[in-house]
Length: 394
Image (cartoon, rainbow, N blue to C red; front, side):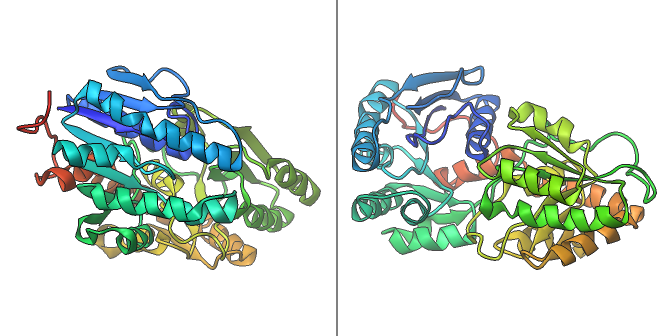
């Protein structure tokens, strides 16, 4: 099957290190592995695409504020002619703020389409950045959501937003993010004993305020004051990195920050951790589907996470109904520290969580299954590998 993967979001380098980049790369790899002819349309490829993917560059998005929005609309308008040349059997688009052409083209051509939605972008853009034409962005969202054969959303909160703006809310589905379970595996050997040193608490992700890493630093500082064998490993970079490291030094926390790493280097860092943490604050957006948590599970790491968004659902029920992690109140460094102490003192629990988390990641969250289910929503087929769509343009 000939599949066109479209991403007109200028903030996402497809071959990059962002979570969105990891997501897109996973989609491309699964499609190639399943035998499809894959075409990538992007104004910001970020590098050479995976083997088997043909790149079609779109006009770059430039300028600021209103000029940038008009540039993004011009970029999206170029998608139609590109799809005419490719003649795909299916269009898979990552929803972007001004992306409406791909789903409209597919609808007009009688070709199935998948619109992958990761956030309510008009609201997010207006809240965290700037949006000159919010009414226009809302109109684009409604058009794209209504035209797509299937809309797949990373959380129920995003799905609710999508349904409220779609003319066909019955075509909206929830498919949380996933993980490459072949690339991310548990470390060899047993878990660290309670008396093992050092004992490493880890975080993977962009260092931004809404990820709550400040609370994690405070929690590890309290533990270090009683026992200097605790370590903190931060895998990622971001606008709060300098302040976080300064605060950690002030509190005497033994911290290592790797900076931004390519996705293929992250599994080795996960193997250095004894616990993975997702310390979101209370005011974190509730619609996210954190890649880090699925990577922790796939790596067999015990997870300590804030009780926000969909994290209770993700971690609440593993094999045999056992929880897959420990949930703590958001922004509560004392509760977070207590959970870490409890896990360190119970190697048997960490061994069980390693097995249960890995099993859940493989059974529920493998990218290959997420992508196959997404295509199945559009094609009306079982959620396995899809090889062809009869009657599509060639």
